[in-house]
Image (cartoon, rainbow, N blue to C red; front, side, top):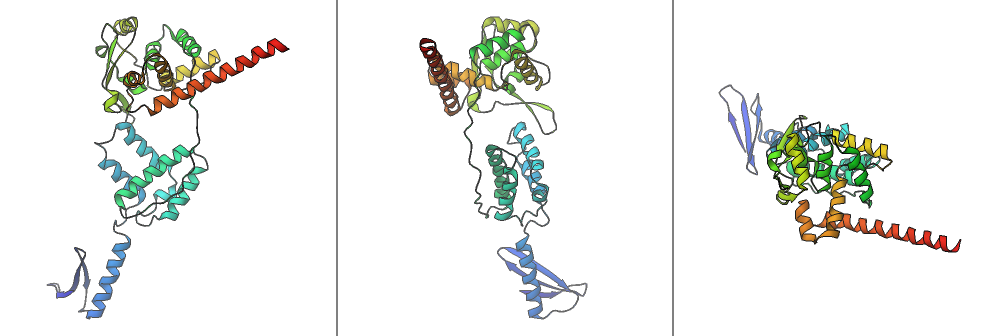
Length: 331
């Protein structure tokens, strides 16, 4: 520790600890004990709050900014929304004051009205922020157990009826493409130039909505998602004839799909469930490797889980039919 007199007439005590210099200015010459006590108090204070006045909300903004050129626009937008879905008291906390008790309380509150999967996603976000600004912190949170949710599987009849209802509308081609395994972002970014006359479709980009609600063309979800698929040549001709694939608002496809489902008395399902339908059909028509390549899956885990559920539904229908036939035989 050193004590020096400044040109202003004040005195400054300073000390180096762990590569950082701490300084205190006095308007009088301090004793050695007085200077040590003041410096120790300053070091303790800064040790408690090494990030100054940074709140969790501020840390979120800084984290999103440092990831802005690395993550997809959709992910950045979701991160921005996630911050505002956390409790106000939590995001207002000083980043250095957050402990396991505060995290447990936040997760408990979120678990009251969110699914286990959503809570886990929120916890992952919180962990990423704290892992960046509090890397020394160990997090041990008990999370709600995931519930097994079986994906709804549209039947062949569901899909045929929906497509027949949409035929001639501007939603028909987009729905056909979804039945061929395209994600919504992929088909929204598709242009006639990406579709060959023979029906070869070159998937190399996707449309996303950024945090400013603007449409952004980005790369596909994974490198495996960049692929060529094949659609009927007559659908390719329709795309070239009209000069576009789909040009209404992105959410309009789901709105139209739900309206048609209601009209036809079909249970509602999202556009993405048509990828599930595609996965199940491909695994009955070709080998797993080909199906995975056509769908652009990085691994076959999702594809196989959907297929397993599809087989289970077929078995349930077969059992019900068998029991009904037995009933007709004996009653």
